[in-house]
Image (cartoon, rainbow, N blue to C red):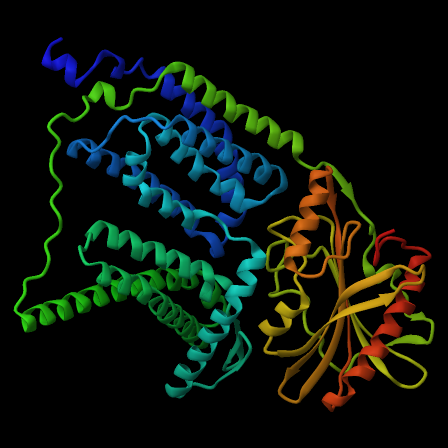
Length: 547
């Protein structure tokens, strides 16, 4: 056997483009419809607009990295069929369940184990490790669950609002703040997730990690410090964006603040962040140089990789056996079929008319009166259409009084379709977003008219002099979930049964002047809700509670 045959054995030769064409067609069948839906959905919103950008950058980086490894002779063909098969199966299962039940982080994230599994099947563990950053970077394209974003984003939004308020006050502007709502002059600005949330932090973290990977600093300490500093850099950039939007609105009006200049402020966010990342990297470099000079040492040089004597030949580099490609493509098509078969199609709707047409003005000892107080909104922001911030199809807020003059405020919010990415917001999220602090959280357990147990929550909300005990529960389909995780599992369970569940938020609240009165307020709200449920049960069974 000649030296040429030894270095490039015949079995390394590619059987032609047909194998990779089959895999590409399978991937297209899976992800083209998914990515189109994402672009018309969460990726089309400012909250997750970084998703397609991260995907494109990750794919380009993956191609560049493969070329670098090929030129350096670091691509080895040591297939790991077991590990690769398990990774591909995991990705196909995640896609089928995620696509069927609108679990977006599973649907979009399934691309990562599928690509990693293909690399393991063709090249093995060592080559997959050398491509780890491309797969890790793809994580930043995955839309996070709304319940996770709501919990983690709220402190960030409040912190950015606080910093922006004090910076504007220091600049002597007429500004005030209530939670995440900033008032400047005659205008009000809501600091939304896109302006100061977890998604922008993830985007900037991805930008910083990509920068570090391209620069390739040899110092682990320097890389770690720069990665950690991206968090305050993101906070600073978000604060600058909110301040700029506030000033644009103050001088040019609300239309300018919400129009083109709003998008310009978004671009400014990333320019500021990139400048701060490069600036902090330069500062860390200068500090390292000074420390090295003080100790009389030279800075460590980047390691030089040794060129292997016999890199793979070009025609053997991308060799993929046709049977393996056919199995991969077949598995992808089966995953698409499973996603369609598991998708829920049966709607369960308990309300067909607007609240205003059937919600009684009188029931029991209660009658509706004009409300002297502004109720806390059930949504995070005003808007039309069902989105993560505005998930309801119908809402109503009323105030009722009994014969003793005691008042209770009622809020009902209904959605025909409860999905993983757009579902009922717990009132805790809305109250905190509108400037309230919460205390005294406790579970709710009370009896309905038919003897069933109603499970929900109670808490005391405070904002300045306003103290508002709140009692609520949520119904999703045939269950009363308590908490975001329970709601998500309920939607998934009913979706796997083929049903698209509807949902309703039932909230009662009242105002008190002293915290010691909250127990009496909770008792009053419980009696009110029991009377309301009994009144609606006659003509609208299954609306407030499962039948």
